[in-house]
Length: 562
Image (cartoon, rainbow, N blue to C red; front, side):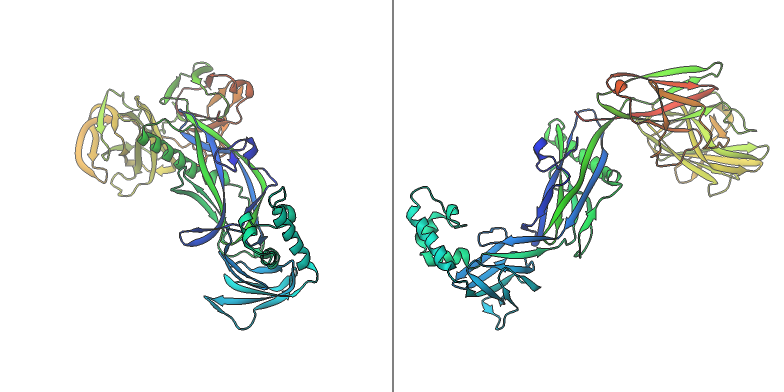
């Protein structure tokens, strides 16, 4: 169901529907500027486990259209002054919208005079027949309306209505029942019949033209204090304007993540649980009056949460067609599953390189530190990345890995970054476009940007040179690092490993931010089969037909809020 409502409290009757027309016709003074606005609300149900909110569907199409606003004497939003009688009325409006028609029950003609304070212009700016459209719109905040050519017989008929009303006021008739609008009983008692007729039927209404001006949508935080996202089409528009972006869900994603973070911070500061519903104001606004036609309004939300507490490594020996499984516990209403990871086969080592040393020891590298290892290549080879043994000592680790050839080259020939939440010992793989190396020496440099850990290795005479993150300091450590140069792979080759969720085969994620890289998995199931979505216990099965190690780094589920 759509999560877009007319009120913050929501409810089925308040859901925004296609075909509705929203009036942006009441001027509001905000920080000294007059705007015309209407606020809708995104209402997204939360739970205590989700760490991300996303839009599953964001089919929102709005049309900002021209409009006509009828303003009468009692319109508190528009009228600052509306006084005078017997054919002359001083008017001051909250906004100088163009007057296109003057209405009068009693009079047939009008003249409009501009005002500057109490001074009235000598000559009229516009003249015409009441009830007829002006040839040219008249724009002013303050002006005087002079009415003439009284329509025969109407004054007496209206006067009789007022007299009848005054005689029957103590009975059942009301002002509205006899056509007297915007007057309360105290006015009826104070004014004589002629004056009442003039007030009500002299200048009956002004018709104002509205055209979208800098139409915009603004999504705000739950407390309204922060602008999370905005769309705007600057300047006055000459016709209707459509808002129908094809990428609204992606455009709003950073705003939704920020909104959830702010809501959690506010709850933490107040010592209260996370709110059950995230309510975000979506303001529609214009610098001039207009209306907004809702052409499409199907905005649905999903929550996301991780299903793995930490990365999991699966080792396949390749002796037979092996199937291993990860047990997962899913929330109700699952819609899609995303899996990210990386794998390395035993044939990934580049020809001519030595196998890594057994990881019996290592060198600790804190955040900001670096270490480099020099390798001797007996023959040319192509390198598509490196694999290092690593034991992270923090919850999140970011490593920058660069390849320098020859070894003393100041600039890297290839480089890549690795981010991992893995806290158990294992192998990390950095991949880059294939680089051609000549025989001789090359150098691999590892820099810790975040976190810290141990670069695994074994005791030896040649070893690692430590650095401070910006350059190698020259201190040597007698450790042969767990380091392997990887052969380049073809990103179009199918991976030697398949994953299934129930009967559903995980496929490459078509929305991945990067193109497929050898050794990297970015897979998804969308949608999750209804029968499986109704179950809480899932099994993610993995099958491989050759020796390899698969590290499942992330398993995330998107599900419908309750």
